[in-house]
Amino acid sequence: MHIDARVYELYDEYCHGRIDRREFLLRAAALTAGGLAMAQALLPRYARAQTVSFTDPRIRAQYVNYASPGGNSGSMRGYLVQPSGAGPFPTVLVIHENRGLNPYIEDVARRAALEGFLALAPDGLYPAGGYPGNDDDGRSLQASLDQAKLLRDMENSARFLKAHRLSTGKLGATGFCWGGGVVNHLAVTLGADLQAGVPFYGAAAASADVPKIKAPLLLQFAENDPRINALWPAFEEALKANKVSYQMYRYPGTPHGFHNNSTPRYNEAAAKLAWERTVAFFRQHLT
Image (cartoon, rainbow, N blue to C red):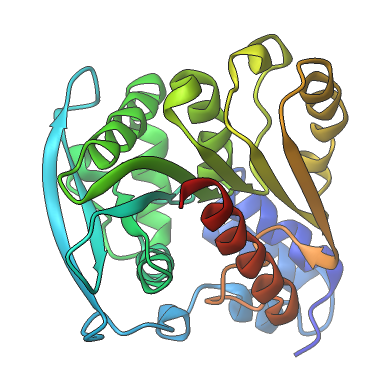
């Protein structure tokens, strides 16, 4: 289905919590002929997102609980996926969007494990009862949390993974949308304890904080993502000024969220290339 660019723009407002589902559907319907069908097509279909079965014999997946001092409840839960073999393994933290640990992010963790990484996908909504099974409620729950404590939960998740008994001690982090911004945040807060970061269309770190970044970064951007892309020039200037190692790719013709294969924003060619670059980058810096 061809989807009008203006409906994509409305969807971006919706998925970032600036309008609710009802307003998204109403405004899309009023915008153009077929707008309601376009809007409904953009809503996630998570059955599409599974590329690696949770029962795949090449991996072992389980939910784990761990302490998170200073976070929203003092404890956290995450989806830990172990590659085949005895380990130890280099590790990758997989950070969700602004709606909790949904099936798409769990699948990304399984993809990382198939590439030989011990992957942890934390659920930032665990202190509020966990991902509720749908993105609308998940988005509302995440917005209701103390955001500084939520970031502390992500920091503690990174430290838990790095210190895991199956870890080599080498830590990478990747994340999407809100999670991409968290990767940049972790690069600042963890300093030399992070060995590589790959944010997908995430908010930039503050320029004043960039001197704290020690990890090399691979930054992945959509071409049609004005809100996030507007932050890049100042971020790049600060990265250069502080001699932070980085690579940046912007994927032509793609919207924000192009890696998420549960919605029509997904761009198969760009997502495949971006993931190949992500895996190669982690192998370079973590193995």
